[in-house]
Image (cartoon, rainbow, N blue to C red):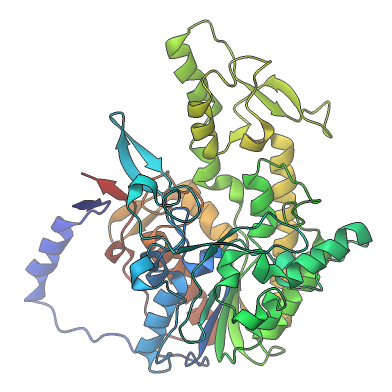
Length: 476
């Protein structure tokens, strides 16, 4: 049996029953598409669009993606899609790429992830029905060859979300730094992205793998309405890697420059909107430093755990940049302003004593130092300005997810008397990977899209009750 993080409001329910007999019937509000036509809705984006959750893409998560929820609500207006196709995995491999579960380990709850790849390694003891084949992807011209996922064999999907994709990797023409040594391999890798990213490869026809970029792929769809939530990975990949990037082996591991991003983003929106003739909503990039991936494991908590064993330990040491040396990392004392990644917890557990001395600091890839935080925040602001300008240019609505998530971090969100927050695991909204929403989190996101759609297009699309969707699953 599984326990959902879910609460109810019985007092409010009883109050409603008590008043029901003396109030007149209240008619349900009319539902309308306004000036929009949702009959062929297409969702463009990355993992947040695909429904990725708990560190993986699997059928249950896809079924509660925000585009799936939107399509369901659009249908209630009478101008919604007759069928919204998600690129699900086969029933026998319903757990897709595998996902993190919360298990009791040594008497305490801990998130446990399967190893990537096919069974037995990729399935280990979690018992998941993963969708890996025994092959790896070719990865020209760069890459290490990712484990291949089973090919999607259904009708052309309407949810075109691809986990891991960025604006820079979506368009073979986007890279525009002016440095050929960077731009040439970056464009080549974007053009061959179906041989690099298993989530993109699995939805491409066999003949298009390694030859068709994402912009060309989405151009095959004739949407009457679209949502576009792209750009997160143009800052997130760098941030979650602790500000460590290696453009020589992964041209998408750094912060995407503004010129390349602008070129790629405009091409994406121009393509899916057919030059601005199709209505839609663009969403911007949240501040990634606010997500549980960076707020759960703190320097203070690591120090306290070490001092409990050895009170003589006075500091935690990290490899990071300093105000005096902003170009190179060095071992130094960690401060409360250093953000440790969620994955630092696993690394520290596997390497006892790491961080307890300057000769054994926590490595840079597990630390987002204040200089890197500023880089990420500044680039997010710049890219969001490009998204806003592009939305205006193509007459699309703008979902300000940056402000929306900042508000959730600051105040939480109450849904029908239930409090939800950005707290890891117990806050209901973020899944066990610390980055992606739970089904309830996706329902909250869908409602924000609906709010923008109704405001922009004079529609009356009904929202959903987020409490009908689960948070993190807790074992009994």
